[in-house]
Structure formats: C-alpha cells, structure tokens
Image (cartoon, rainbow, N blue to C red):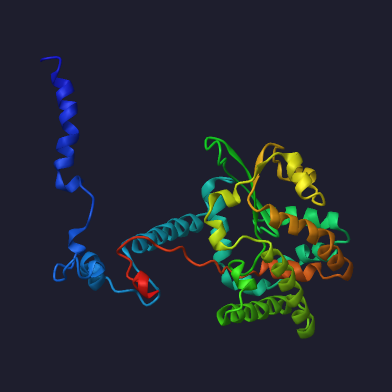
Length: 337
C-alpha cells in the first residue's frame, strides 16, 4: 500500500463524518414556524413550532430547550442521589457514603421538623457568648467554614492578570436582599421588598424564641447593618465592568485596607497562604471594617449578636435566575419583559 494512503484516509475521515447527517448538530429545523415570514416576526419564525409543541409547564415561569435540558439534568441527579442514599453498603468516607448521607439527612423532613431549633442551639449559644470583636471575627471565620458568607466571603478564582494562576478572592456578601438597589432605591417595588424582608427576619428571630417586640427590634437592627453595607456596595451596572472588581493586592495591602480585621488569624484558620489576592470591592470591605469597630462591638455589648446570627442563617435566597440568551426561550419576548 502506498505510504500516502493512511494519510489520505485520516484526512478524508473528518469530512466523511461531517457529511453524516446523524453527526451534525445545529439549528433544529423542526422548531421553525415556516408559516411566518422571518423578516416580519423572526422570533415566531425561529421558535414557533417548538413553542407550540412545548407549552410552559404550570410549575415554570419560562421554558426553552436549554431550560428543559436543565430540568432533565436535575431529574438525573435526583435519581443518582436517591440511589446512593438508599444504600448502606458504601465504604466509610467514600464519595457515595458522604453525598448519600448528606442527601438523606436533608430529605428527612419529619425528623427535621421534630428537632426544630435544637441543632442550632449550640451555635446560637456560642454567638450569644461573644464578648468582643475578636470573638466576632473568629465567629465570622466559623460561619465561612459552614458556607455562610457573612459579612463578606473568601473564595478561590483565576487571577485576572494571570489566568493560569488561582488566587484568593475577597468578595462582598452578607446582604439578604438581592443587591444594593433593594436597600436604597425608592420605587414602590423596592419599598415593598424591604418591608417584607424585615417581616421575614422578624419571623426568623421569633422562631428562635424571642418575643414579638424583640423580634421587630432585631429585624430593624439587622436591616440597618445590611443597609450600611449595601450603601458601600457596587450596583449591578457597575459590576458589569470587570475593572470595577479587579483590585489585586498583597497581604500587607489587605491588612492596611482593613486594619481592624485580624487577617493573620483568619488566613491561618482557613489555611490560606499569604499570597497575592483580589479584593473585589475595597469600599465594601472598608465598611465592614468600620462596622467591626462600631456596630458589632455595640451589639456584642448589648447582647444582640445572636439576633444577627439568626437573621444571617435565615436569609432569603432571593437571587433572581440568570437571564437566558437562547432564542428558543418561551418566556415573554425581550421587548415585552
């Protein structure tokens, strides 16, 4: 056989594969509504047939191929979790045993309701026992270890300037409402959200055992602290600018930015190296630093730290779903939203 034959076979193979209709993936022509002129109503032309065959389920506010695939993936994940949590034969410490036990404990609603606040009482007692700002900072680190990011968070992310490197990132957190606008804007919908949020926090505190008047007072305290942090936060428009959250600095710079925070203790407890890191919102962290000196010290002295902890642990997951860019979204058209 000619020595060039294998090379020609390899060269032609991708072309042959690409020519196979079964191997091609692109626009689903069956989704098109060819009864509509594309230049007149392109949205209906591109999505009409799929939307007609796939109405929005009653449990959803929007629907698309991408959303449909996401829901199918959730069902597959649920099946995996149901399977691993039903078995007791997994090796101790194995991935299957860990995720199975965690999922099973979360799904045991009867036991959760029966236990009530009991599992949280040791933690709340520790919070009530705080007597100084140093104790508050240690509790912040403890909360972070439980994935409760208040009043800020620390995570790993690629270095904006050297993407091959992963560095620590300090980011703004601790707000129970979705973003800054909910705390500062005066439109009726934001005012309504604030009132409902105060009521929610008060209810969380009542469930922790405080009386009605104490719960309302605690809710106002929590909201006032969050509002002060929100006022020093970037709004969603500013956050679109990558440079607005790009503030790389070394450990000494971080300590100088927020001198009241014991970063040495935090980094040691979290086992983070004192290397370069990114502080997404320096102004926000300075507000946290001031709060440690002023608000938290006063609250600890007055015995309100436990109220704040209950508010933090009961924060509403109010982050809106990200907007979908796929053209087959069956929600209202962009110009109608």
